[in-house]
Image (cartoon, rainbow, N blue to C red; front, side, top):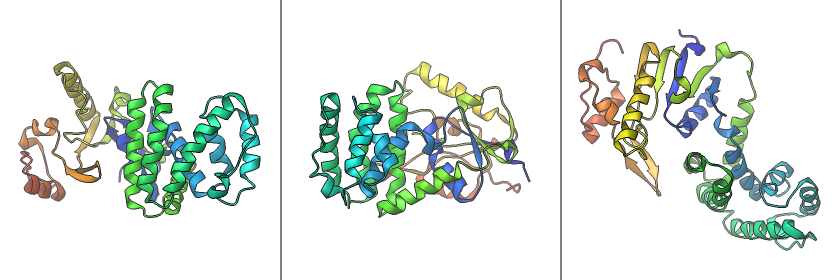
Length: 306
């Protein structure tokens, strides 16, 4: 019975929102991303997906334009010249036999990109996850040279690669991406019908009737890179900010596993949850089952309110 605008979902890092965004889109629940772009609107995500679109469809002009402009010395005129030749090709194999007459820095960049295409062409029939991870490897030097926050952006890209695990076919993955992109264009004006998604940093000073805090695991919040005592205490203050944004209802959640290095790894709840007095917590059935399986050290109290 709550208005969407009175519901907020908070997370420690922007890349924690991706799977939730996907599910909200599938269910037709619109949302407003505060203090940043929706996942599939972020520049580095669009860049990597553009590579994949070229591999899938060599005549995707928008994807060519986006990727080529990442390379030094390649401007609008050079992009047009290259694409005029590319558009005559039947497939990627034909393209790899193409000799484009350009010079200077653009030629050096084209030769570099050509080598990337050769590698990707060999793996185009692999599962999307492997292909995406190859693209991310090629893209990472550019990411590091262009963005001071490249670590956070690399986290986003790893999350994108994780998402592709569920897809056996590149075409199906790109169709899902297109669906997500099209959904983000709808209902841009009516904010009363939007759930709020925001990092905890952006939520300071604001309140909502209902607040969900995501990814309160030992690998999510506190941030695993915050190991020094001063950093850890700052994370605790951030957690305090998160839980005090709720007026009436507060939901704390954490994933029970994470996909890393080709396999799933079990997770425990954050110390911030473990340190909350058990008589202040109500559990849901999933949390109860997770505790039984992992022995996570949290005592959950049943409540008739659920």
